[in-house]
Image (cartoon, rainbow, N blue to C red; front, side):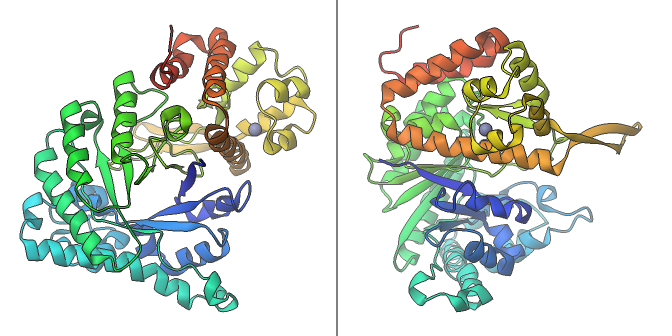
Length: 446
Ligand SMILES: [Zn+2]
């Protein structure tokens, strides 16, 4: 059974990667509704021109953005960002009244007529906003009607972020919104988004409560997002909780479950090894395997190289030190045999192991900091693209391996990665591989 490979749209600068390594690599694209609100014509052109004809799309309605501190969705002048403002206008009352002033509260959506009108507008936005632009766009004129896929793959019910302390307040709203979205969707699929804190995922009672409540709604699937859950650094309880939670939502394979920010653990859990606990996994063109629900500012970008056998991104400098110490940079054959033989790595090295440095190229810029100007090295855009293309090549292989290789082979690969890197990465550098085996292997023996 294949595992659906989805990619999150992030910026227009990265739109060419949705056809990389091949146009048919991705089943679908997940687009945040604020991006669709901000640049609908550009987004329609992206879907028509930069993705394969069969690529599906989903619009994340991003309704949770309104429940956070308004400062998080405002510009430097304290006004709501343009894209958020237009989304609030499309969704109408009560969002349009409170946006930029105060966070949305569950009680704002308690009146039945208010919630129903809001859900209807949110559903209609997903069905009509982008599809209108797709139909009108220049590129569409050259396509036959049959080749023009305009509707989203599924309608996503409006949803709000749930923590262990706000579960009792938000869950009834999320459930009611899902029921209303099902009723408001004339044909096609309806999904719910289950966006929860790590605390919910490790709490048996909270997990059970959520799964039971959603199982009663006639949904076709779920988007799952665990706040900031980094699978390479997560605890056993969190990963076990994630697998159990997704497996229950999956209802014996009758419902789709897509982790919208997942790594290789989720991919494995989606395959036979994990009992098909998920139907699909999404990541960004540039990693995006975990993300905070409450937006946080980006740090200083550094080049990171995805080490295939560790299924983890490592700072370029640390990766270089490991490969040197292992003597895998003595010649290009050793590098390709031990680290990576993807097209990007073959092309970048071009037979010379010294060319591995091209993944870490940087330029030094002066940056203003609180205590004055400092000189900081930034990756060049070419170095960034090389790391990204290598990452996407490896991700494609991970999805194929997890869906086709026998479970024991996948477990042996994790063990081999551990043995291979332990002496240079230390126990803590390979601990995630052991933990994944422990959770996924029914016969795990330390
Ligand atoms: Zn590679």
